[in-house]
Length: 362
Image (cartoon, rainbow, N blue to C red):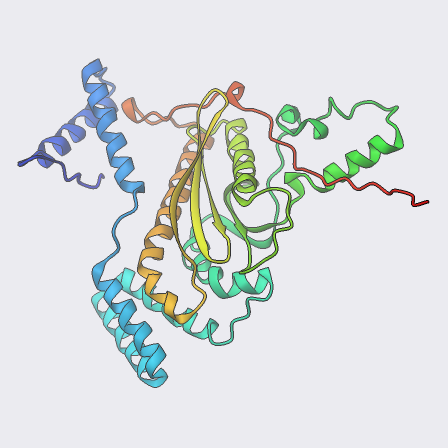
């Protein structure tokens, strides 16, 4: 089944024509018919447009935006009236079977409690007060996944692909048995500070039997935090997502896509990464929006819901791709997914280590 495409060129409505063409062409491909080159080119264009619409940022529901504003205003003016309004709206949403409205009301209810006694003094309390309700509503509800909050590590790369690790961590660079004590110390420091040893702020892994695949990672700074790290947030997230994408390729997963999020204590940015060609990784920013730190910020929830729904969709689609790949199934005709060659992968940049030197004073 496909969602219908609305396609207009000037005053002409081509929606029915495009949808009929897509259905007939895909049906022919599924029957094993070899499609003409012209048909393949047009069909690939239509499918690409469909995916772009699916992953695009949609304007949020105006009714939800109005409801969020109404609830936020009532919350600030009269807490008792707010509770009554929230209860009535929940009943109406259940009666109307409006899933989006139920989700919004649930988040408003959760945040109204968390923001009363919020503490933003540490990264952990900041995540619990501002991000965790969104993670639990969208990411923790994805079936066949496991989620780690400040306790997760990236899945290791296969030993046979040590060439993808930073040079100082590869078996070639550390094979010598006559290394000096200084070299051994550098090796130990590098292992302790490698990308693979970082305890990540939030991580989502897809689970297939005993196999796990990292699909979403988060980098968080609490408000007004002192910047002490040697790597910027974007560079850090990019390196982590690169390793996640590399592992999918090494496990023979076609068309790998991984997601990430940065919260700098004021704004949230979401990203996805794909591997476009030989040695070229595309880190694409999907959205940028303000984080929720006070009740005033709750008016942003309808927009934030759209952006987190986008992340959830990408993760679930990647799950489906992994499942098909592990089963050895290939989609027919023009729906076949492009395979990324292992030869296209590149070693990761090293995680920097600040070396200190002890100087004797005379």
